[in-house]
Image 1: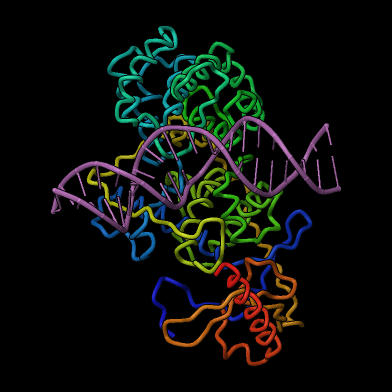
Image 2: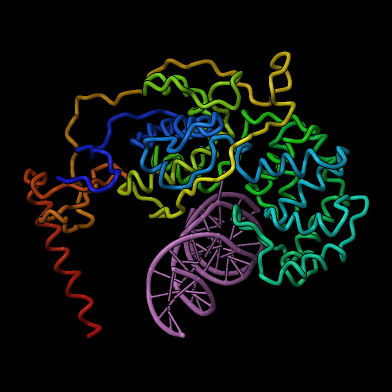
Length: 427
DNA sequence: CTACGGCATTGCACGGAGCC
DNA sequence: GGCTCCGTGCAATGCCGTAG
């Protein structure tokens, strides 16, 4: 059987590992190992590039071919820009810093920021709705005001006709409402998120992303290892690992992954751990959330048969011409000790092994066939549903592997024939 | 009353088709 | 080969309808 893609050797049966989280027994797919492997290799690529090594920086065909963000959000291109040009430049006053960060993320596009910066004095003290509106109106000639990292919704509640007018209105309203001060007084990021989410147009996910940016400023020291919003991409990634049983307990499952990370690094023989800097090995909760989303894209290519909402991933990797010169918020770096670093890997390695389901029942029972497909080598493969397992555990099996279950094949061919007759009504 | 699903809406990058 | 046109997809949110 030829393996034309990066498809891993296919297990003949569903994997028997499972974990118990929040009282739920969740089966574990190969994407679990892919997650830890992806995080280690993606961050190793970053460090190889930063060290000035020549391309290619990886032997992994998928990481070489497709574009993925960093394990650590702060190293992504736009975050680096925000840190250098939005946060570190200009007044460090609470309202001014927050204003600049919120203005940037309103459009999330470097060229828009630079347009505004070239025309206006980007301070809250001198903010003028109409002046900003005019500049954006002129910048809108090619329709390129918004970046594409997140889909930004123009809240109609702010009286404008164009999206950017509504976003300017939202920004002005948040500042006039004293949002920076409210956030500084919030006890934790979760509380801050509920404050930001109370504004129309700011959902939990966008609020969380904004708070991560604000947390790079000197004014905030929210822990990024205690709480996170599990975005849609990360939730999808979790489902590819643990099945649909993760619904509703995403945060707890992410905490489980954070707490057991050292066990997984060791189990997989990964010694070159991802690191924010040399004083801090491993990943925090927010990095995990970020990585789960990317790993889900990786899994679309590597495990196309583990189904998800989206089937393909097309963004190709293009090597950047500029050498990497990455910066971190000053307060994050470990000069003179560990205090002040927001990411605390305080969770000790947890040596509890994955709970193995008893091997007493090694045979998996086929419930029914879901689909069939001709394979290039000739012959037929069947997508098989297992008794007691959800659709994401469906496996493609060759005809020969179904020899022990002739009644399943018979049932399938009967149902298929019935279905084939139906569309004829249209003729 | 809440919770949840489905759908509309949003801006724009990307990639393929079709044209010169 | 280079250009435009157009469809698709995205780390989202709001709203409305239905189920409980």
